Image 1 (tube, rainbow, N blue to C red):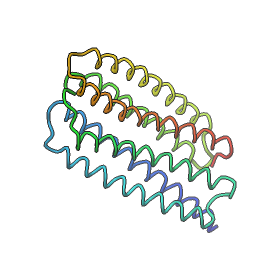
Image 2: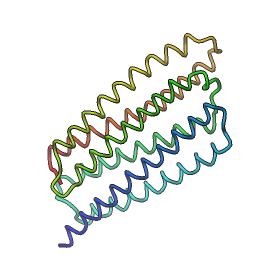
Image 3: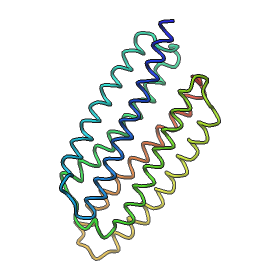
Image 4: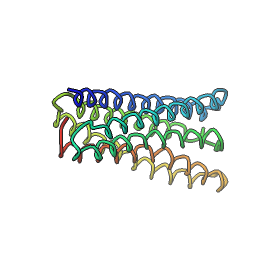
Length: 216
């Protein structure tokens, strides 16, 4: 009975951990969009909020690790569960790194590509939403394999769309009349943004592999 209680705690903590990631992403997207429109009044404040959320997420992951060490779940999948949740944590790290980049370096001329950046940021939010749904399907009492796989499939499709938009926007930036330094800076920012969806897809892959071993 105690073991099952620990597993229930892991599920609750895992979903709370995912909520921290989703909250971080929402703040980051809003802050980058505001910056692109010339509003930097709350940029540092938003970056600090994301930093705090990332710290809270790390704390939750440590709690989960302790529960796994103390006997939650079968030994054959404990490491896989920890690897999955560490992958989710890396999504939060990418979000934090992206907003820190904007806050500290403030790349110029982003307003010229605001619509394209907004499109990619919006797709990134949808991509995360699909992963969040896949995680919920995995952690349901009996697991929902087909539901999980459908959300994972959508993650892959959205990430591919983001990759295509990244290539198109990179070309658009380098064909613009801005100084080369500004172009390189913008492409660096674009890369940091798209690394988030890359990590979301990596996490989705980890989740699918774990689901092959055991649906909780």
